Image (cartoon, rainbow, N blue to C red; front, side, top):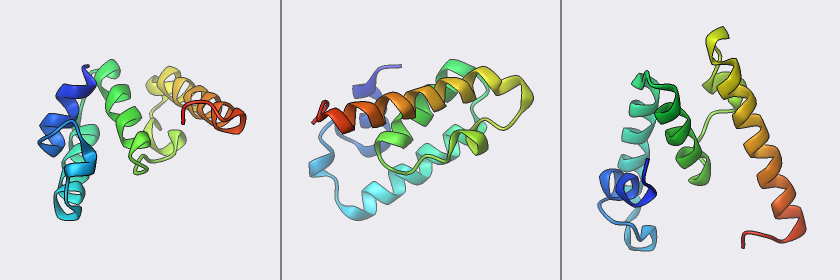
Amino acid sequence: MDLELLLTHYFGTVDLEQVDETSLVLGQEKLALDFGTEQEPGRRFALWVLMEALGSAPVPADAFAKPEEAQLRSAAEEYLTTAWRMEQRGEGE
């Protein structure tokens, strides 16, 4: 999935600084709805990562609760661990 396409789809622009609060909330609601209905694992994970970047993702145990989603849950947990480590080192800012 292409980040610019996702941002444009949900928020109408790739520049979130230009999005007003109402549009941001509506975009996040649509994103959450699509995440909840997406069946393809790779797309589901990509939507979760975008939600996480926006601060609205459910924890991996809730987001990927089904037994068949164990790999996605593990990948999401590893993503969070890696992001936390980068933040501690001052990377990614």
